[in-house]
Image 1 (cartoon, one colour):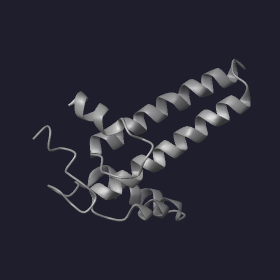
Image 2: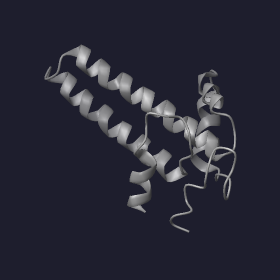
Image 3: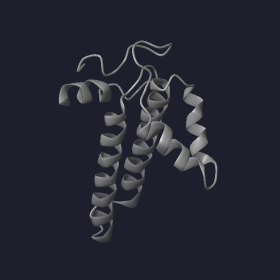
Image 4: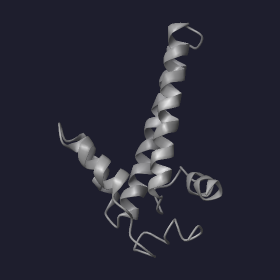
Length: 119
């Protein structure tokens, strides 16, 4: 399982392909840990604010890429990540679609099933 997660997370420079729900959740747990760490460091003024801003910007970009790949796993356009910007309901919609609903079984128009290796 960990090998599949590492393989799915390896290429965060492209929006091509698909990721599983577990990758989506593990990545968000990783972001939470980084935010908590950055908050701790920020209180103690260990890093310059511009450096923390760059780290957070890179995390935001990686989060968008992971979300696009998750939409691909649901066999939907990556542009659906813009749904998250709809006030009030957008984030809930993304949470349900990407976090709880299963992806397309087998190959779809965005690539092979990311769970094929563990099934």
